[in-house]
Image (cartoon, rainbow, N blue to C red; front, side, top):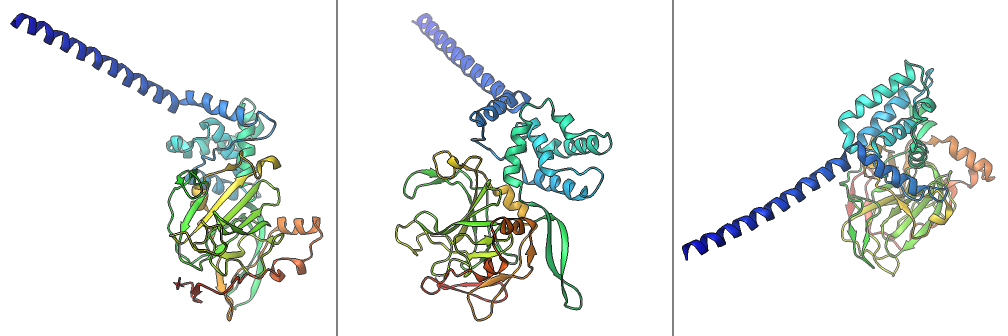
Length: 399
């Protein structure tokens, strides 16, 4: 009897040992696969994705993985070398690194500064060109086009009004960041990385934008210059605005604007907007087929960026929306200041801006300054107001 029990125990122990060995083998294989996917060998997968993304002659997919740190560093290289013998284009620098990193900047953050310095040294001190350095990078062109589609209108020359010590206003020429944070300067907000999270109103879907939580009436700012392509009610976004960049590549979406008074008074479809303009006011409208309804629990701005490489992508099942959280962090360094227009519900920017892109668009489309934004005829006041905003930038929510 004892002998039979010992045999059974040995068989059980042997079976358990075999199961443990199988499990351990699986774990080791999984870890090898993970390491392989996170190593330079993973670039093959990213390159396959890049190849598929342009299989029909235009880009069909973009995963914008450029980190906040990379945006800041590349921006500094661009601005600091402006008007120098060798000017480093920030988009080209980011595309070069994107091609090396397989688009995953977070996985290579420890080497980012060193890689940027080495690239800059090759361009500035060794006399090499970007064409020479990228000639063997099969997918550099893809990353350059994709990243320029995102960042192409954000950096350049412009003029902005400044005030001297005597109180005189003058125009100052600037080369630098000409895109702005979507929230006016002096207005607080909270946010976190929320791209791709689940949404269930209407149907199960991913959150294809970025939420910035604040107070009702907070002035909303145009991130980039462009023209109003869509304005009005949407059952998901509530009162919303869609602004198209002049090159047609970017569609900016601002949603859940204030009940009753969602938009700047001059704004209407077709209006030409300059980066930094006040275009609307934060609220919590939406999630309703009925117009002008507050069905969103938390007051916030939803803003997003859609990339368009072919017009067939604009309103389709193949839309390209990118994660703008790193961009939101980056744009915090450039916030447009606004002041209350006394006796009205309006806020206006305090520093006017001349964007060459705006002037070029107006000239090409025969639009005079008298027809542009400050004389728009859209009535923003739908039926009253659900909030009051004080002149010092504070907001009192009466909703």
